[in-house]
Structures are given as structure tokens and as C-alpha cells.
Length: 197
Ligand code: ADP
Ligand code: AMP
Image 1: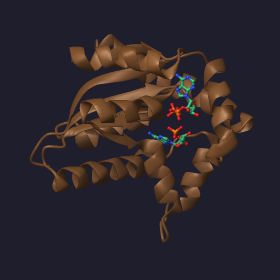
Image 2 (image 1 turned 90 degrees about the vertical axis):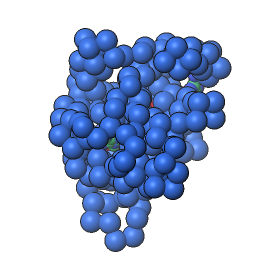
Image 3 (image 1 turned 30 degrees about the horizontal axis):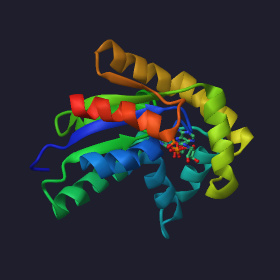
Image 4 (image 1 turned 135 degrees about the horizontal axis):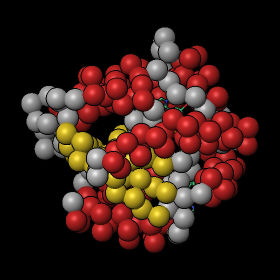
């Protein structure tokens, strides 16, 4: 990649509103949104994928897919975007890095190849996360928007993802946004972050 990708990692609990807010950031600030979960779901459904069964199991269990798979999908998506238009080098990477394995994989493979500007952290309670995912589950068709998967996803978030956010926080790289309010209220906060950055 000749032009260095500029990356914002977007993290928060399941249903915190990452995808919803990323859509608005794309409209307003010209980023490209790459959701690790969406890329994995697309790979799971791709005919001939050797990883389909493993990905589906991880998604249902709320566990984390091995980093090599996720990273290869993210890297390919970034390369394709920039090959089409080299000026499109701003990326929101949503749902990554979700654990230590993700972070170490990123540092190993992308460390010198992309610049992480900051981590955007959508913070809200587990109850809000569960309520929003249960509501989304009425129409999403997602195999993990049910109470059983959600309990595991929250557990994975607390034990694996939150420590990653905390470690970036120590480096002063986290922009925290209160995600409990209405979509427009949350976006007003997000906007301030991007205008400042
Ligand atoms: P994530 O990408 O973090 O899993 P989503 O953006 O898909 O979360 O949001 C989860 C669900 O909650 C969706 O149904 C979405 O419409 C809804 N939602 C997102 N943000 C808010 C908000 N601020 N207030 C109420 N509902 C929201
Ligand atoms: P999401 O769409 O972000 O809620 O992600 C749904 C599911 O996809 C997660 O519960 C994981 O099983 C899987 N997943 C998403 N992002 C990652 C990632 N960075 N690494 C591994 N697995 C992931």
C-alpha cells in the first residue's frame, strides 16, 4: 500500500451503536467503514470459503475468530478501497481489535503499514447493550442477537475487549463517547471528536 491508511478503531459492547454511528461518520467525514463482524459474516456466507463453519461457531458462541482470518479480510478490504481510489485512506475499523490476539496480530502484520489515529470507544451499560441487541434481533436475522449468545458476547467484551480499550487509554489514545443517549445525541459527541482530530 503506497499511501498509508489512517485508521480509527471503533470499540464498545455488542449493540453499543458502533455500526449506527459509523454510518454517520462516513456521511460526514468521508471515512470508509469496515466492520470486522460484517466482513466475517460475508466470508461465512461466501461459497467455497474454508472458514465458514468455524466463523459461524465463533459468532454463535460470541467467541473471537482467529486473528489471521479477520486481519486478512480487513487488509484485503483496505487494499481494494485504496486501489480504486488512492485518496480514500481514512478507515473506521469497527469491532477490532477485540482481544490480545487481535492486537498482537495487528501489530505484527500492520504495525508499520497503517497509522492508528485513535480509538473511538462507545461506552454504555450492559443492560443498554442487551436491550438494543434484543430489539435489533426482531429483524436482523443475526444468529447471535438472542439472550444466550448475548450473555457470552458481553462476557467476551468484558474479559477480552475492555482490557484492550484500557491499554490504549493508558497511551492516551482513547476518545470515549457516552453511548447511552439517542442516536443524534451520541453523534453530536462523535462529531466533536472528529472535528477536534
Ligand atoms: P453495534 O454495531 O455496536 O453492534 P448497532 O449500531 O448495530 O450496534 O446498534 C444496535 C441496535 O441498537 C440497532 O438496532 C440500532 O438501530 C440501535 N441503536 C443504535 N444506537 C442507538 C441509540 N443511540 N439509541 C437507541 N438505539 C440505538
Ligand atoms: P459484531 O458484528 O461486531 O457484533 O460481531 C459479531 C461477532 O463476530 C462477534 O461476536 C465475534 O464472534 C465475531 N467477530 C467480530 N469482530 C471480530 C474480531 N475482531 N475478531 C474475531 N471475531 C470477531
